[in-house]
Image 1 (cartoon, rainbow, N blue to C red):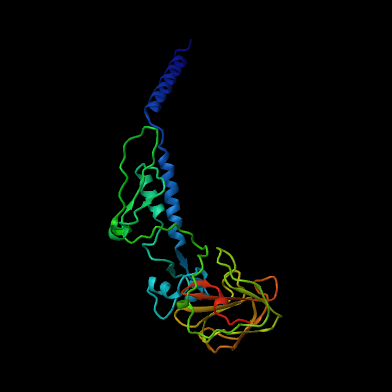
Image 2 (image 1 turned 60 degrees about the horizontal axis):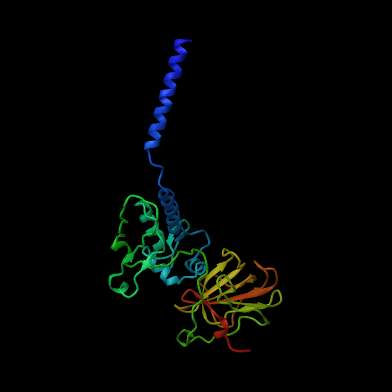
Length: 304
């Protein structure tokens, strides 16, 4: 037998055996490594979805309308004065402490080797201490005892325990006599209502009124035009009017618009013509927002 070949085979066998022994001494990668990465990605998406980058043609009001939040709150969160924004500007859509509690807890716990069930939020004691307790999952498998890191109270002292649902329409504002407003609303155009308001998520947030192409669309109450354009998907040529600090109205799918941004209009003034921009038929889609939330226009418009 070739001594050189024998030595090579022997050396290879010894190295292979050593590798197997070494591998057997290492523990497999813990499952929570993957869980931590998943939680971290989820938390990152939550943060990303709370930031909006201003595009050309956007206004503070159109951005607030798009995300169903109050324009005054949006301005306050981002310290915006005189409603002035610019393309490329990064806007927070909610306060920095209004983040996904579950995502934060999942991330912290996963990093420390804990797999979470649902977070437990203390109810009666929450207003006093406002603390968050994390439930440790029960498991039959033996694993090293690891403590879950406590979340920083300064970070989460004012955190709201809500799941992030970015770009999903929130529930409609509840109608009360106090929210009725002192405005004398009039119908924006003539014609039958072909689709009514619905409070269901992602349903119709206003009224669809049938009409003929070119039919006048009128302001339902006096106010200031704060948006004119077609940058909001699904609305076509859109006009938004600010009536006061609480109320906005919107007129969508117009063929022609007769007003400009920052123009003051009177109740009954012709602001546009009915069309089918962004729609399959000629109609007017009309909405009223109370502090950023959609409300049923039928509660405000006079009975026909």
